[in-house]
Image 1: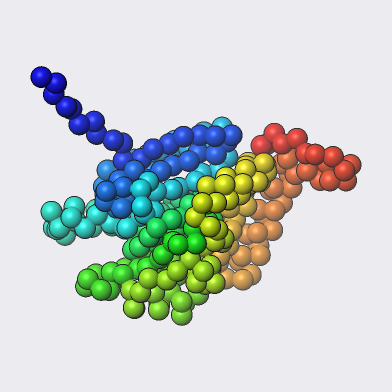
Image 2 (image 1 turned 135 degrees about the horizontal axis):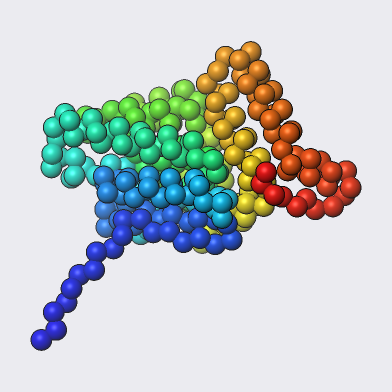
Length: 265
C-alpha cells in the first residue's frame, strides 16, 4: 500500500533571469492572502536581494487566479487579540516600507484581483503592469474594517479624491480606471502580461544599478519634504551621483555616441 504524502509548497517562489528576480506569492487557494508566514518569507527574500549585486530589478507576481486578496482573514480571526493584531499590522507596514526602501526597482505584475493589503502591495511597488481584466479595491469598509494601512500606500500613489472614493465605497475598479488614477503604469492583454513585464524589467535592468539606487531613494525622500528642502536634498543627491564613475561613463558615452559600460560604482 502506497501512502500519499502531501508536500507543503513554499509560500513564496523565486526565480532569477538576467538580473531580474521574479517573486511569486504562492498561496493560490487563498488568493495569495498575506499570511504571517508569507510576509515573513517576502521580507527575508527582499533583505537578501538588497545586498545581492546580481539582482537589478524585482518583479512581484501572484500564482493562481489572483494577484493578492489582502490579509488572511481566517488567520486574523483565529487569534484576534490586540497584541497579535498590532504585530500583524506592524509586520505588514514593515514589509511595504522595505519595498519602498529597497535599493532596486520593484514592479508589480498584476492579474485577477488586488484587494485591501493586495492593493497596498501594488501601490507600494515602484511600477505596476496590469492585465486588462485585473481589478482593484480597498473593500475593508464593507466588513467593518477600514483599510487604514492600505490607505498609506494608496494615498501616496493616487490623488486624494480617487483614494477616498476607493476607501469609502470599497468598490472594485477595473484596470483601465486604475491606470487613469495612477495606481498602475500600464494595462496589457492578459496573454501579453508576462512579456510586457519582462520587457519593462529588462529595460530598467540595463541601467546603472548605482544610479537607480540613488534615484529611487531620492524620489521617495524628496516627496515627503517641503519644496525648498526637497530641492536642497535633490541637489545633494545629484551632486553625489555626478561624482560616481557611472555618471562620468554615461556622459562620455553619450558625447562619444557609443554604448555605456556600467560598473555600478
